[in-house]
Structure formats: C-alpha cells, structure tokens
Amino acid sequence: MINGRKFISQCIFLFITLLTYKTFANQNELKLEGTIGKFPIEIIISNNNWEEGTFEGKYHYKNKKESLSIKGEIFSPCVEIEEFYNEENTGTFYLERIGDNFSGKWVSDATSYDVSLSIKSGDKNLLSAKSLKDYAEKTSKSFSGTYESELYYINDYFFEKNNPQIEIASNGGSVVIKELSQDSINFQVMVVCGPTYHIAYAEGIAIKKDSIYEYREALSEDEDECVIKITFGDRSVKMEADVSFVCMFGARAYLNHEFIKVDDKAEFKDY
Image (cartoon, rainbow, N blue to C red; front, side, top):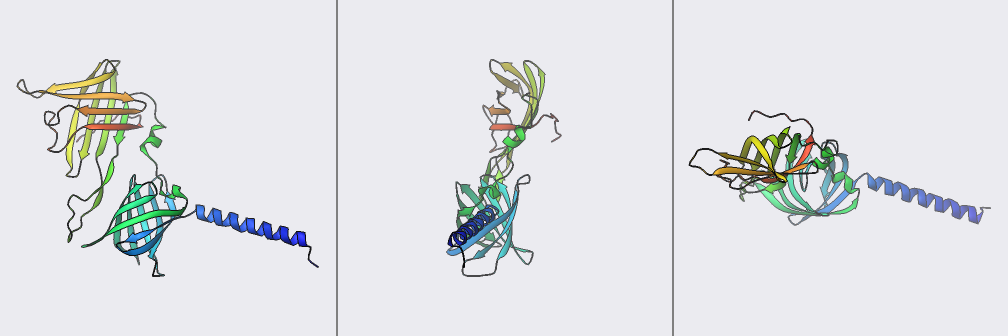
C-alpha cells in the first residue's frame, strides 16, 4: 500500500524538479514574437558571444513548422540579423531596440517589409554585448590613450521601394591623446558623420585653459581660427568644434562627440 504522505512528497519534488529544469532551460534561450509585414513570426535566440557581440538561433512563420537559422550582430541600440535556408542567406533584419521592443525592416533583394517584435520570455542577456564602458573599466585614469565613440543607427538614407538599401551605420570614430605636460596634450581625432559619410578630422596640440583644453589654428592670416574644445571626464573625453567649415571638415561632418577610453596605448595613425 502506497504511503500517502510519501507519494505527495515525491510528486512535489518531481514538480519542483521539472519547474527548475524549465526555468533553467528558458534562461538559455530568448523568445521574440511579432510580425514581418502582416505575417506573424517567432524568433528563438539560443547562443550568444558577449565578447564579439554576436548571437545565433532560429525563427519561423507561425503558420509553418519549418525553421530558418539566424546569425545576428549587436550594435546597441540596433540589431542586424541574417536568416539562412540551407546555408543560403535569404533575408536580413535591420532593427532598432527600445526597451523590450524592436522595429525596423526585413530586406531581401528588391523586397522589404516592416518588422515589429517584442521580447516574450527568456534570458535578455542573450542580446547583450561588450560595450565601450566595459573596455574602459580595464584602463587607467591617465588622459593618454585611445578613446572611441559608437552612435549606431539604421541608415535608410538611400532606401527606395524597388531598391531597399539599408545598413547599420555609426556616427562615431576615435581619438588618440598623448599628454605632453600638465598643461598640454597632443591629439588626433577622426569621426564619420552619417548618413552621407563625411569625415571630421583634426590633429594638433591643445593647451589647458581653466578646466578644459583648447586647440586653435588658422589656416591663413585671413581665415578664422578652427577652435576645438576638449573636456575630460572619468575615462572619457568630449570634443567640440565651434565651426565645422573653418576646421575644414567634410560638407556634412561635425565634431560634437563624447568618447570612451578603451586602451591606455596612444598610437597615432596614418590616415
């Protein structure tokens, strides 16, 4: 004869075990649901490389059982996802993330659809990636070093209905700074400004004035000075040019960026 209490205890133990297993399993994947155009879809992300900012998984249309494999790349707050059928790329998602929601486009050759997705369950860390601030934690508080800025967005500037050109682009770049004395630094900065990819570039010696550093240079006696103001924070630096065309930047380029320190090395580049 079965002991009632023992039987109930075994059932409770089994239930807890299954619940724990299910919870653990859900933590190893992330589910998104939404639509491509008017078609409902489900995306499962099951593998993430935090260092590289990449992930893998699969997705399917809800009225079909067959799944397509996916490979994605994280450009926070944007995500690019390539889909594959029999190892052939059949389309690409270009998405922008706001909280748990994603919106953007799905593109394949001359075809495109609006996409709307939301996180439904699972481990949100599967859509996380190493950031500039993570690199900064490994650097010193010295001003000398390499700094970067990454301002990602979906560039649809050249998008046309029959030629849906889309990409993940960045309004950002890098700065190299070398301390020369307590009151002067040598710097080199280059940023690319979208959506038309014009370049802002400058290099020279900046002198400390009060709490900031200033770079001033006139290309000729008849020209106004190019003025760049440089302000340091905690493992960060903000650079701002007063007048872009005086500094001979590209037509639509500008310099008003905050850069995060990613390396203590200060190696100037040949552009």
